[in-house]
Amino acid sequence: MEDKDNTTSVFTYIWTLENSPALLFSAPVESPVFQVESVEKTKWCLGIWTSKEDIYFYVQREKEDNGPDSIGIDFEIAVLSVDGSPLIEKIDKKEFKRSEYVKLEEFAKNDEVFAKRRKEFLPKDILTVRCRMWKSDTKVSSADLCFANTRLGIDRQTFLWTIREFSNFKVGQRKTHYLKSTAKTGPELYLTLFLTQKDGEEYVEVKVDRGFVEKKFFISGEISLLNVDGKVEYAREIEDWFSSPKRNFYEFEEFITIAKLMENKTSLLPNDVLCLKCVFEICLGEVSSHIEYIFADNEQAALNKTETRMICCPLKKALIYLYENGLFSDVNLKSGSTSFAVHKNILGVRSAVLRATFENEPKGKNASKSIDIPDMDPDTLRRMLLYIYTDTMEDLLWDSAFNLYKAAHRYGLLALKKYCSAFLKAHFSISCACSALVLADEHHDEDLTQSVQEFMLEHDGEMFTSEEWKSFKLSNVQLAIETIEQIYLKRIQNSKSAVVSS
Image (cartoon, rainbow, N blue to C red; front, top):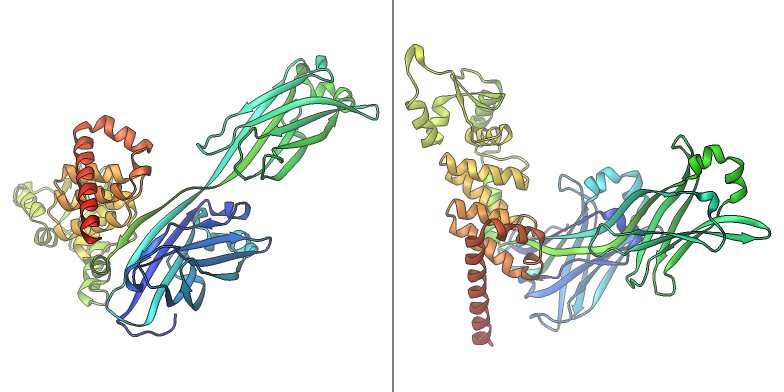
């Protein structure tokens, strides 16, 4: 990115696309709409699509927002590696009126991203895109950050289709197999096997019918004929778009001749059974898309402060050495079969709970050399000890932050608890919001509770129809009722505020 004054306002949008190889076979995919407060409250979205050889992006201003009729911005689009560094980045600037967009053509090559360097670009099949926006003439100390997620659907199915008493099967007869989609938005397929006669030769043919679903989708797969040993004797592939009501089926014409089957009846028709192995992969396009969290500048600073504090401090290096090598340790903390050699004086200074534990231990010859920590798994204990010794954290994921929050509460590490809370807020999603609500309720954390409720209010349509919410409300009836009440009150307050401001 070009050099900018430290006080230039920068907005960063991180967009993750799950099952991203499906981009090769889907229509253009748009990101969730986001509002950029530092660019005069304008609203935007990103788009991505693929041609035969290239990946394209576009940046589009929304039709309606609170910004001026026209606004000039600088922006950068980058694809990030797993460590957050840009693999490809392009910078541009443009004057945008409402609804206008700019294309970034031939942004990357398909074979580079999806084949040659797939591990770099698509760890766990996730493409991470970063968009930065700023106005060069703006001098305000804001650096907002927004996370969004889009999941592309892929329905994969494999099954065996057996046709018994095949020798009695005649031209004009049909056998049908119904294939129900494993995805809510997926098409239902009907496979029909029948015999045809052409130029005096009889053939087995298979038709794949998508019924009356009008949604466009791409299907790939294979139908294989298995022999008596279960090995593939013959196979035909399918790669095709089902794109309109006029194109709602695909035929495997002249799949195999009846003559060939009868000539090899012992191998290909054991016990007079035709056995077909069917493998299908259906790209469904976008199945979910939402904003996960927006960091205000002060929240991001709180996280960064914890992550970067004492980076070059010699004392930190010494403490890391003591922790990693167990030098002069005087007690072991055990979680299951895992043991950590630690120092009572360091842990006791950092945690009043641990200090009380050590003080209540027998002294002298009867002093315990090992203390069990039954309420914590080894990874969480390791992370907590690393924080105690170094005041820093490493590579948190949702589950580790969730467990570490509970550990920090249990052992009175308030700064660590605050950090974990900020991390959880930054990574709310439909699938984990309910567990965060239970966590906040169990620990009487009003701030975390309100943050979860605000997330649920913002995503109420998707949230309250999710399987997670259905399960949650059955096992947490009172909490579910209280949550609905609070969200209802927040909605009323928001409506009143909107009326007053208008």
